[in-house]
Image (cartoon, rainbow, N blue to C red):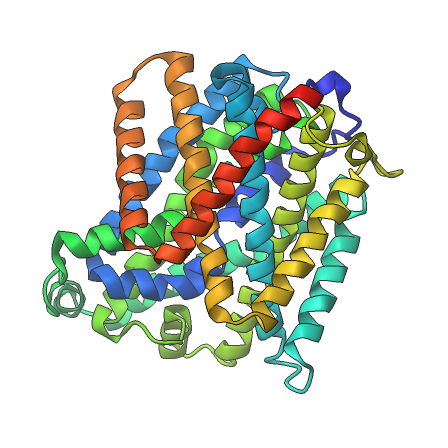
Length: 431
């Protein structure tokens, strides 16, 4: 689909794009999930985050280069398709749609648990339904309102992380000696308490936490001056993300022995409590609520625009091309959110095993999209060493995910990809 064919409005500004990418990647995973990665790798998790960030740096630079070469692209599908062909573009589009549908369901379920902190008597499924309806209504408004909402939701997370880094640095400088810091880093089994195996195992968690950074590619059709804005944002965002991951994790492992991190409590709550911040439980609950609402908001945008693009390319009925008075693809949005409600129902009523099997899919699909972007970059600019190394590292991580993931979840994931690939044979003729 070319930009001239699109009915979408170009109301997203550079600051919206940058904050969307930051907000999509800096989610509840850093506030809550960081305890898992630290528990797995110990202080060496810093190396894991650095390696993961360098891989994604190559991916995002490739995305920027492709966006410059193919200015007619409006989504990630439009970046991959001109280089790898319509089949690769079709598959990338649908697996990315599936990725975000499932992430939206998981984050909506999570949002209900955070809301229940303040509304303990309201059933979780009611809170989840209210969140889903509210976010759907928000996404039916003009895209500039979506951009502003995402900007401020992301700002809450970034301000929290910035304050955490500042307060943590002050505490380290005023209350801790160099010997105490060194003991926390290497005095509990060394810097690599679980060896290289721990670093490798944590890499799986870390790479999943970076999911969402590629969202910049979904905004091509609604960004002001995308030829300038998107490449600049793609090149710059990974540096900021690395800082907002590495510095807080460094503060945590310097302040607390890694062996004391884990369990259900966020390490951010532990550190803020040590610093003496009052009402830290409620504050961090609010921050994590904004994180998951940001992910839902981003997911609704991504799924609706991807489905709209598939409709404009003739792969789904023309009904999904319909836009409302605000130039929002309303039919695509409502259809995508329908699957959100189904996903939430599965989360609450079908049992944890079923939902966990489905949630393996986003881990696979987002890495597939990253690998397709790297292969596209390879074809676009030639076999550069950085591209080859990043692709080889992603393939190795992907294989490790297959080996370590539950068999049922892996079968479901590859089954979905197979169905999407086979469906291309039928939709191609119609398109």
